[in-house]
Length: 60
Image 1 (cartoon, rainbow, N blue to C red):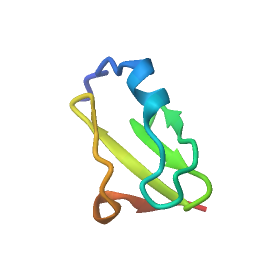
Image 2 (image 1 turned 90 degrees about the vertical axis):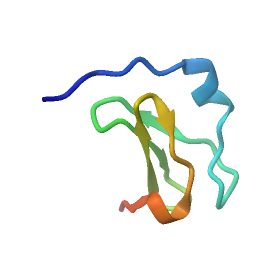
Image 3 (image 1 turned 45 degrees about the vertical axis):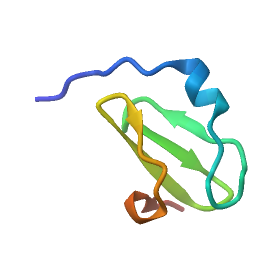
């Protein structure tokens, strides 16, 4: 059971990667913010981005 949570686009645009300070891209399907520079994907849980490196997953 998946529930689509509405995410505030303005908030997402204001966030940057905590590692590289680069712009993040939003993956609505996976509910993640992706830092291409750091090769990390930060989860969005219940509409709240979790910007902890320990919670991020590696991406290629």
